[in-house]
Length: 417
Ligand code: UD1
Image (cartoon, rainbow, N blue to C red; front, top):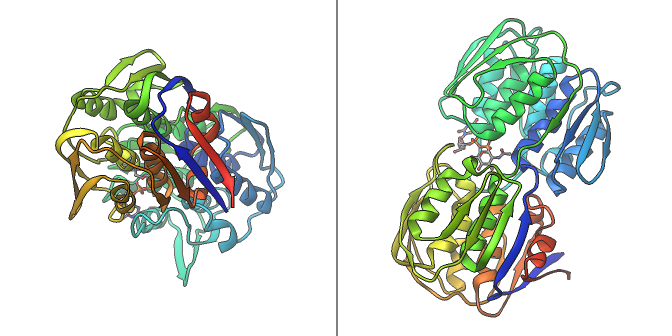
């Protein structure tokens, strides 16, 4: 088992280069099987979620070649097979194989996806979308089978602007006959990145990034080159860490507009930030003011940054309120932050965080990916040496987190116990 040992209180300065976006890459990889030829995708992050998707690709017989920055996926010899629980439970995004295999073969069969336990995480909207395109959905225990004689484009309205459902329906609809529209579509930058990839492959998708996406079905998709956008959540995490312990810490290789909601809250708190074309420089200050924030779909404040942001709120004077509106079980970091000295009360879907407090080291557990990121941020700003258990969660989503932090002066080590 791996743990992280972090001795806090160091000032971080230098440059952290942000990797490709996990939530884009995990959709682009299944999307690549829709082509008849190989595609090359650059800026793929080296995280364990990508390893898990590559295992599924090789199980299906698709050839993958990976180097440190890119992946080549050749689906020309692959076969449609049932994806077992062994593969699907490793990550939530394995569900994109449902849409991609349905789009390619008109049939997909797999077990319910895994991922972080941050809420019930149903996939009813994905399934309703597939049904609207003409597929029959069978659910047997944990196993989902979707099958269609043919897929025909249809108007689809999403009750919730779900990222996963929007992408999965695009994957299934891209080769359907006729026109599909997705209304109340999610608008996250990752959706635009996936739509651009599919269009590079010959798809006809317009409106990605707005709440109405239109897909005109095509018969064939070809291989192409594509690049994953920078990871706005990884960037946001390091910005928060910079506000906690940075001195001119440069977060590089990013698209600052993707972080507008976080930047605006950080400015409100009083963080010293300088925004460049593709970087942000952040410096810690000692007199932060309380704020209220609530998570929302893009371009609102990202739920994936709620947990790390709470750590920054422990440094703000007064009572800050952080409301979680997307996931019903995303406060698992709170007891651990309290054990490190934070003053937090859980009030329904809102956290009341009183500050400023000095955090101190403790033995803590990363219960999920972003809770883990929050604990890393807390440990870096705490007095003493914190041990974080269950780091596997963190490694699912943060490329080379130990090296990146060591390079800017953090005392952090990954230990095998
Ligand atoms: C994606 C991100 C995740 C992020 C989330 C919200 C990936 C791999 N993961 O997750 O990091 O926290 O977006 O920004 O991209 N819902 C339903 N039925 C459905 C689908 C969703 O009720 O069929 C609900 C969910 O329970 C949740 C809300 O819709 O309350 C948003 O979920 P969704 O946007 O689908 O999240 P994911 O795509 O799973």
